[in-house]
Length: 160
Length: 397
Image (cartoon, rainbow over all chains, first blue to last red; front, side, top):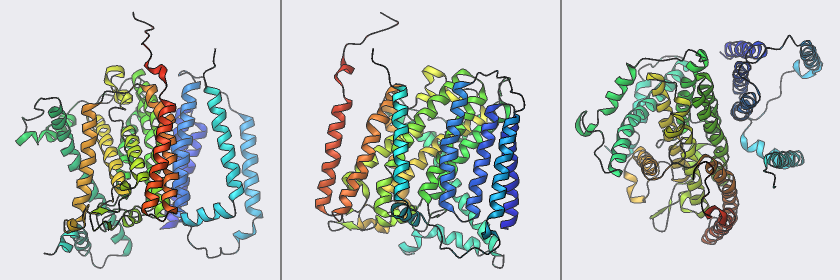
């Protein structure tokens, strides 16, 4: 059951990602990227990480995808010229992929069976965030606040 | 028949239906159980949709001192049937320059997300269709994908009005999603769970000799959060006075301009289902879900109370539509960022004050103080004098 689901989701996610990288119209590519995001969220659900899957949908589909779509809309004309094949992009993608593969192969935990973990509840995530990871959390908060203020300053009307 | 068995009548009916396939494997039972839940939710809400579409026209007509639909069936009650047949046999028009696939998927996606959000709301005792651990998060995660559907409708139509409407819709939905979610946070903080069932269970019981129920709307922070949540819900479901995305006097019908027939009906359905979902969540979070308002009224089944509260909120939706004019688009945005968001954060602080005074009377007054001070301060700050200066016209004398 779960293997079959994995294969179906994997095919869908990979196909959507491929379409996102290769479709000529940017908006279509962005919408395919959304399908890929949903596929990744489905993997999280399959692994029992309900919270992470929902946050994936919430943040990536609800916010990042809308942001991408809006950016394309505000910056591009309707009759856009398709750019030529981007070789630099291919090299970077291959390098990233090779790096990932190398790291996965270096990881010893693939061979041993995973330790039994208690189910990941929202409460536990909250507790860990407020104890072990409180400083990283504060740093992220500071960064986001700075970004918010920066955005406000950019759009603020200049006083004449 | 005892009141207990009437209360659980739908649950027992489901168990009886499942008992018809006794020796099926577990996954068949699971799928069958889910299908029964889906059928129940869809059946109930499609009926409610039909009913509310005619009731809305009736109530609006009453407000405007006219009769409203009264030709089809008794009191015009069969009007939705006639409307449905009319929409089904209408010609389906797809613009020549439209993006065919995106134009086709958009109404399906919008309706699907609206239906999905209805799945996690507890409609009665043991009557949550899909009781998941982080139900509230699911609600908002699915709800946030609606924006994408609106965008697809606007962009796929390849029409200026559609695009403008979609831009307005997304801008106001993104802005009001923040207060909508932040006003939910105090409830989650106090309950300590993201599950809708736990939130309803936490509001059980009565104080003051069974007269005042322990609903969060009766605490100062809960009342403030409820009003903010309700206003944000009005915006999220694109209802008057926040219906700028589909303002018919300005941009025809916004992102729905190029849709006709059944696809248009899908948008219409999604709008109403979104309204049901937001009202249902408001009932769950602040109005005690399916609990009875007085302890003596607990003999009436729980689902009756849920739908009574839902109907009350829907009536307020319609009432507001019949009373208030449309807001200007920049005022809608300014209101979200300058007033709603700070007030929503205040609710969190007020709830914390209430919590650390051990939910007592002192805490009640302290949190009232917090909400009142911030409200008065904010209204002073936002309410600038120059807004009431004599009107100046740029393009007309």
